[in-house]
Length: 157
Ligand code: PNS
View 1 (cartoon, helix red, strand yellow):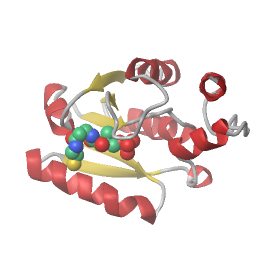
View 2 (spheres, protein in one colour):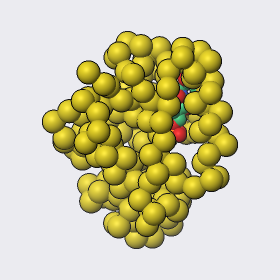
View 3 (spheres, protein in one colour):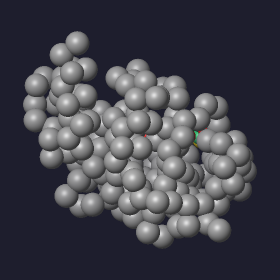
View 4 (tube, helix red, strand yellow):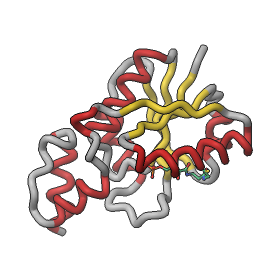
């Protein structure tokens, strides 16, 4: 059985993230979406909130969502993941993602694979979505509807 681990901050999950999970769900036997509990950036949403958002929108039968602390490779071992999958939007992601992939390979030998994100969502990031939401911009085409509502509430608080 092949298990793919799709890790991230998901603060919040965007339609780009969900597309990557969907494509993994059609390729691998099992997909574990792994929400980092304490991302380096100050999150808008708690890890429980981010997990709930993903659970609501990643309803494919072979997808689970979980939170993790510490090293990703330790979590990968704990859930018997064979591969880490990350979305790549553009070359600007590549240097950083390659560094992470090589460090994770050094630490545990695990393979990382990259999924090219939908071209029409190539400019999309959680940080930009928060920036737009902070100033009252429309994010409804970029995130699921319930996430757009949560962003609006958080931006106003
Ligand atoms: O959505 P992001 O911010 O690109 O996700 C980054 C993430 C969570 C995948 C990365 O920061 C991570 O793996 N953090 C866990 C700590 C860790 O293992 N660090 C070493 C990786 S080289």
